[in-house]
Image (cartoon, rainbow, N blue to C red; front, side, top):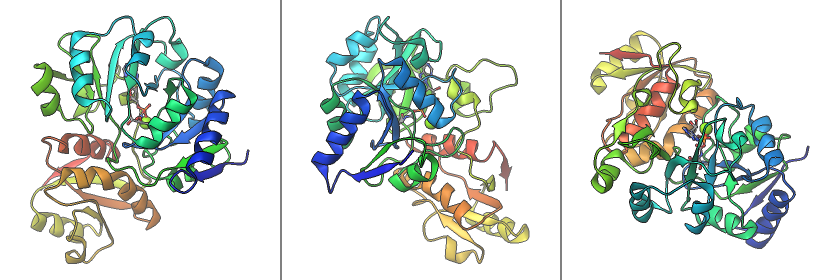
Length: 338
Ligand code: TXA
Ligand code: MG
């Protein structure tokens, strides 16, 4: 299969028309969003949705997020919209927030991975919204990487993983947030945070009150334990390099990196002070710049051929929780307290 890339900033009309054609014929197109690129297909066409699973190599029990551009599309997808979902939608949609609710009969078990719930998100990205609006169908879309590798934050990374596997990639430039959306379940009370992301726990708590943080957010899932969010049980965000997080000061980090001849995943401005191969992933005190950089930094570590990598540990409050959640998975939960 030939994979075409169209830059939506340069060829707006042609990009929208091509995406519309591919999606309407029941095929898969990669599309930009503000978080990461998505692998999109008509959420209500089971054959089209199966092509997403095939292109990604995704296990069938790992459900997809359904993307909408208008709140009116939500009611058809779910049994009912809980009051707290309405409050969160009013405050954070469109944006990097995915809400899980009891699904309606319209949503197939293929989309929901066999669960009786469905995950729904209204993205903020103008390109994503224009594509959903044009084809006027809800779009099922997981991140556009091969199952297990880091989510792609630009069209080149999508192409690296999906060349020959899908017919179309819409290039919308780099994703500004850079990590996947926050996932919260409103199918239980109190609501449960399943994946931290661009809308923070603190911001949501201010709107709806108590939220349980699922143990898989910060910990490795215990052997044999059922994941609240199936995606959390799979190895994720993993570059080829072997990463270990170092908790401690910059001086302690420098000492360890040198002693063990590791490469460094460090904060902006630190690399040249280390005297070893390095990739920087944002400002030390700026979790938003870290999230925007993290996934491409992980891919760059592979590009420079890094094998053993020590990573600086981010702060875990606010947006930092999303960064830390991805980094501990990339590190296979390996942490050294310096
Ligand atoms: O930012 C994002 O969310 C991106 C863009 C493309 O929108 N999408 C994305 O999708 O990250 P994906 O499939 O890579 O991650 C969705 C996560 C998975 O961990 C999945 O298991 C979980 O959400 N999920 C989806 N539906 C669920 C459900 N009904 N119950 C529990 N977890 C669910
Ligand atoms: Mg993913």
